[in-house]
Length: 296
Image (tube, rainbow, N blue to C red; front, side, top):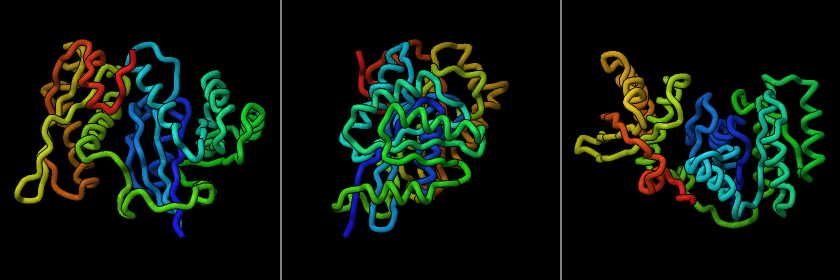
């Protein structure tokens, strides 16, 4: 007798939502970086626990939007909770409770779905404050249960996964047992390169960059040829991405190529081009490529 259901994973930026989804799935399906607001569009990770299939919606961090891209990301985050069987609020236990976390909790409070509080990064948190955080948030929201976990080390994950599975309704699985995400390989390729941009240029490159996969083609020898365009807003940003003598773009490409080869389980030929496109974040087609809805 199988069970299947949707778990909406929400929280403030940098709470560790993507790391948690990857850990529950058992392999990487969402990109991760130290930069806040790395996740832009909602992504579905598929995890198995016994006879239960968990559909984990990894949503963008919820924050105060200042531009169209921000509004689209926040809309995607709240949109990811629609139709969920369970709502999971992930909180950075190390960072503590700020107004962002409180506002998100208050937004979840009136929702009828079962809600779970997940205090993440407990391996780095101030232990005496953990119970205080839990008490304050449970006073705002009627959480069914509270979990203290570390998505990085795996502490507390087995119990969390079993509890989420037990809350899922009876029904057929929505995806084959070996499928781990709803993202296409083409979309995954763009995300992997964008992750490398953030990891290698964390302090230098602002959010004004995105990656578009222009060509994704399988060759006769079983390998895959991928052409991508990195969009930035200004020539100075293009120079940062290229690096001295093109060294930085070569390193970004080498690491993205290696990771894609592992994820796709075949040889990858990756070609990167950096283009200056002022106002790319006001282009409807770019939003479609990213997987976000156009928000006025």
